[in-house]
Amino acid sequence: MKALRTLTNGIIRENPILVLVLGTCPFLAVTTQASNAIGMGAAVTFVLLCSNILISILRKVISEKVRIPCFIVVIASFVTLVQMIVQAFLPDLNDALGLYLPLIVVNCIILGRAEMFASKNGVFLSALDAIGMGVGYTLAMLVMASIREILGSGTWFGMPLPVLSDNNISIMVMAPGGFAIFGVLIAIVNKATKGKAPRKKDFGCAGCPSAAVCGGGLACAGADGKEAAGK
Image (cartoon, rainbow, N blue to C red; front, side):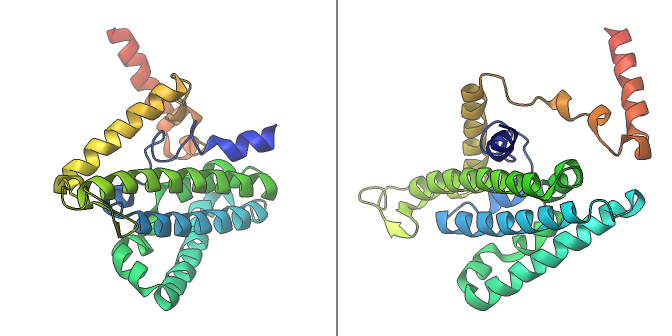
């Protein structure tokens, strides 16, 4: 049951885009075409899976003081590998994704799962977590891109659609349309989960493993106390 819950958490309940709202820059930038969404989703899933597995294997070797730099080196290595493969075999996708492909290195989803999950769990569960988060990310990207491409360009995966190809809504492939659809999708997921998705307070400093290092736990506790006193 724990393995199944770990695998499925990232699809809806803890969807990295529509619930945790992480990695939204590439989500809004490259989702003008469904093919771009699949490419970006596959790249992020690959990096997430490989980095989670390796970090989980090395979790007892990596020193607590240098864990973040080590995580970044691991992630950057796999991103470089993905970028080289895409450049060699999928040049059109490489041109479409542009700068957002190498920027996977600083994607909050990957570093967040390394810190919060892979560094604390075994290889099997870490791999399942990566697959679940990757699938959830890719599905969110695909849904967003499909809506924007169909309405904004009148095509789907580059194929013209009857009627819509001659009556498209161009604003949907622009930033305002992207933000509008993003908001609608978040509202739909929130309604579907009936408020059972993690709330913002679940991800505060108190639950962060780095709180003791940065002093955030004490700072946030003091701020919460002042806020409560003010109320």
